[in-house]
Length: 212
Image (cartoon, rainbow, N blue to C red; front, side, top):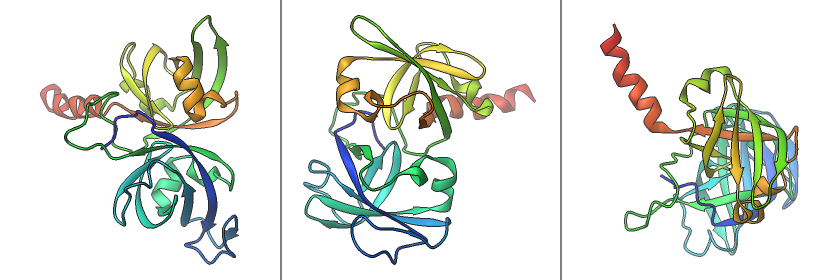
């Protein structure tokens, strides 16, 4: 489990499609789109990372397969590639990184599973005096989980929904978020990972039986 509070901006070192077989760091092989081996540099998240640990990469929970200094690798399966934007990453891409939360930590954001529900696209950015309003497209099947003042994770960043519509939503980004996450550099047309509040999904499941 994660909280959506990004610990650092990491950098993709290599993306090897089809389960590996690349020619070294920075390589990209096109051996198929059913899996990938992702290599990422992150000075903070690797300080205590071990094989089998969970690290969220742009909001996607990945399992560490190896650690070498400040670099770790993780396998990405087809389901993750289909539901998220990780397949679009290239060597040099910046990514939001967060280690799994410990039981003795404060829950600074909200409950984030690292299980991306779908992707959206940045529609517009509107600068303000001390923040920036960003509007993002929303898959139709996720609209029912969005409520004003509710929580949403965008590329792994815990945010509060400002406005919610049938096909889009907006969030407000403070200077810290703009400066310390990938959202500060996203432009209209760029894709983002979206994870809705898991509590909303459980409520929907539990109340469905009462309406039958």
